[in-house]
Image 1 (tube, rainbow, N blue to C red):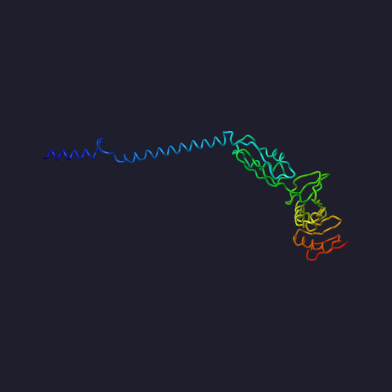
Image 2: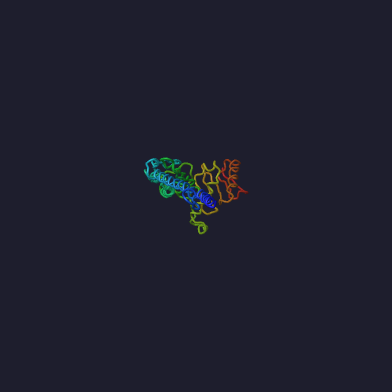
Length: 267
């Protein structure tokens, strides 16, 4: 009987331990981890391959390279002039083109440009969208004219004066205000006055004369003169001048330097 009991205990222990002997702790978890690691390695390998393919397409292939340059926004300049100054590296990978450097180069080489927007036009182009400065005043320079924009920037010298752009005459030599307001400040003063003129008056303005910061006058067509004064209260002066011209259409002299007490004279 004792032998049979011992045999049964041995059989039970063999059944529990299995044919390979006792199970090591964590063996099941190891078998579960291996497929997850293989999946992770497969994902990493795929990402590396895809990354390498993207880099090759962007930099190594001939698919995404600069083949054309398009320019928009030119008025006085020609697209050919803009593109020559831009010096876009045709044939280079489109992704590698330094658009900021092209923008800076254009603004440095072409002072007529006020702003530049350089962008990639996938898959093969670079787009140059430019805005040119517009002259609001002209300054005589020998036989030529220097164009001045609305910011007071002297940006170009031309042989022929553009139509409907008044000439600026600075006569501040004997003015004590020159010590406080140098010529550049007086140019900005004149520019501001020119920008405040009513459109009808601006068309008729032939000359803006500045002798000091508070002595700006205008020479209009048909021998008319306007004493404007400083650039203060510009909007009020503009409205007053329009009303004064309507009230005294034959007058030759208008004074709006004190817009609350305007005057007109001559006929």
